[in-house]
Length: 237
Image 1 (cartoon, rainbow, N blue to C red):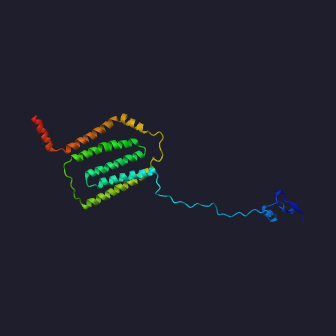
Image 2: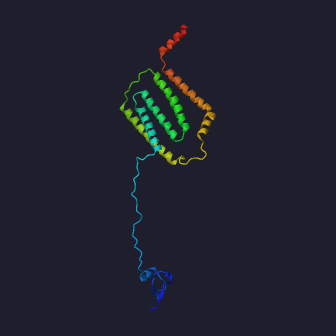
Image 3: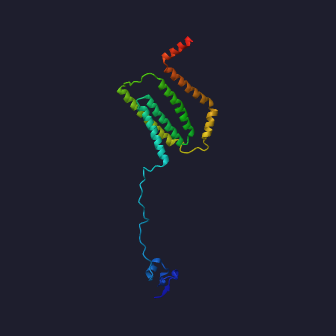
């Protein structure tokens, strides 16, 4: 039987093989190869070691999210306190808290102009008019008994309106164009310039309307005795 050297493994400890085999295949070569230097067996592994999965910490909130939660809770607490407060003056204070919280939410949304309008118009004008109206009112506010049926209808109506608003907001958020910012959106300076140049007359009319509301509130809570005293003083002069 003639033997020949394996041409595919020159310089290696491949040994000798039969001529009829034709080529040095790996599995034949392993069978014919003898060497004192054996490679160490590789340790079978099932894959890379996996680190234990960490559960997301629900209490880990960043600073901005924490501030938003506080502002939202303040707005909701002010609205609830305004509705369920037994005194009108206390209701106004709760409502002022709600307005401040809404202004803070506008600031967090980078809407400084809306925050300024919220503070100047609602807190500086509307709340002042309502506060003067309450302070000038001399009538005693008493509790009025209402029918249970009317309370049930009011509660159901409120729940229905609240559910409708939630559904409407969901549809608007899903199918609106708010997801993508429009290029070339006007800045706060452009908005202020348009408000006090193009819409100057509307701003003046709004101020006059608030002044008329103040005068009307003072007229409705007037005291007849004080008016008669002023008339008598004018007649004597």
